[in-house]
Length: 305
Image 1 (cartoon, rainbow, N blue to C red):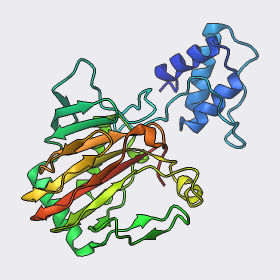
Image 2 (tube, rainbow, N blue to C red):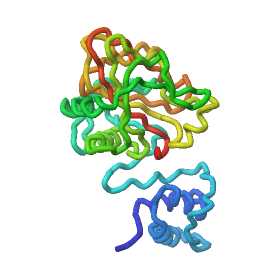
Image 3 (cartoon, rainbow, N blue to C red):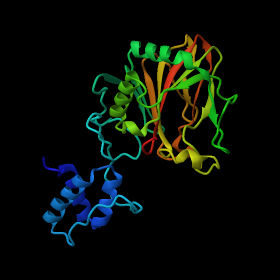
Image 4 (cartoon, one colour):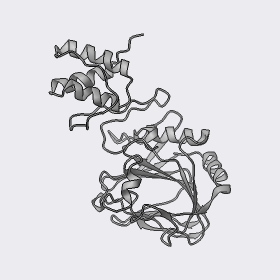
């Protein structure tokens, strides 16, 4: 079977025509995750067509150069995921022509509201009632008091600003998580591996989360350690697993927006820069009657390992 890849060849041709060196393209292709033999075979085709010289050198995995500012090849996504990361700097649903829904591999998800700044999209039917109930049941034995990140040290600690109980699932920990993670990846066009595992939170009567940012301040002393793993957070999806009788909205104080915590629905928001200008300040309003459960998914710049 031929090792050449038509998408890879087109990317190579475009960049070679714009003056990018062969060595730099080889480095970028390796860092994007393409196999050595596919890179070499595809490059041979690209340089022959464009009559580029000198001939292609062997692909080196060690000592990769720092990436330049030319158009980059996005990391290769496994066939099982069937997801292609697009040119967006941050996760973004395909909202071209103002669709009323987006189809994923297993579910039709409806769009309830869209805001440009901050970038907020409200979805309904993201999760089924059974999926909501199953996530709650799986989380029950593991719930503990929620923590926040200390920006000075990078350590996790209990803080009065966050009064929920919570737990984590590892990425792909069980079939239910795997299905939801794939659905989200298709919905917002961002690789599965660039996401943190699902966090489940329970807000009892009176519990809340005061307004905060989800990104890590890159200037804070404790951020350097956190950012080594996957880079910064660039988007958040809050999925509602159980609706309280009253209260519990997700609030965006900078723009006066409240999203009601309706079971099965979700709110997505992104932040292209780790700065208050993103208007991504948000919080969980106090639950005043009943109990609220949410599943939170944070998406990173790079693979989260």
